[in-house]
Amino acid sequence: MGQTENNKPGKLVIISGPSGAGKSTLLGNVFRQSHLPLRWSVSATTRPPRPGEKDGQDYHYLSKAEFQEKRDDGEFLECFEVYGGGEWYGTLKSEVAPRLEAGDWVVLEIDVEGTRAVLGHYPDAVTIFVRPGTLEQLGERLRARGTEEESQIRRRLEVARREMDSIDIYRHVVVNGEVDGAVKDLCDILEGHETKVVDTP
Ligand code: 5GP
Image: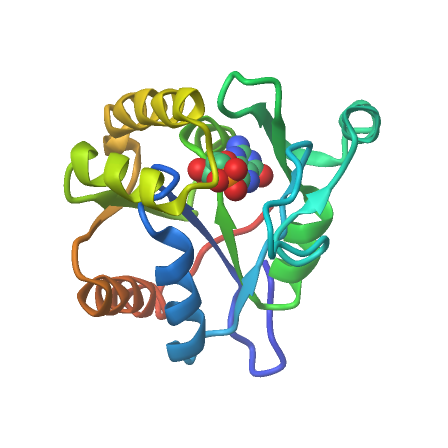
């Protein structure tokens, strides 16, 4: 079990929710406001960086060959082809186990399939699904962001619809209607787990 110097155990936190539901904005605020030792797990992906994204900060951007090599070497805790569009995403073991051991609260922002896989290893993870008010609102947000083509937006909406069907594998659901309220909900959920002990293998 992970321990900090002041003897507090580390915890694994999994956040999922449709792309464009506003998870990144919410989580940025949670990281700034929370007193908990939250640490971001930087995933690996084969998708190209969007404007403004930085390697090693938003993702570890890998070629398909590099990703496959790490997969073959067993470096991933989980990895999936998330939107069926040929791009892979995965959580590196090196982002998780050492940090839990150091007593950090490691935050994964991954999809539903990834969550199922990680729960197989860490059944006590704190799982939170962030959902948009409605799928129509999600479509509007994705179109306003303007970073995907219409065909990709449709695919993401289809995945969102399917992901919402798996909502009951999550312990908590937060509706991202109004930002401040959703940030407070997330902070309250995390702080509610502060006194509970989670075993890490
Ligand atoms: P985006 O391309 O918008 O950055 O991310 C697309 C989706 O990939 C997000 O909904 C996110 O939850 C998921 N994702 C990001 N990293 C990982 C990962 O390491 N594993 C899995 N399974 N999904 C991920």
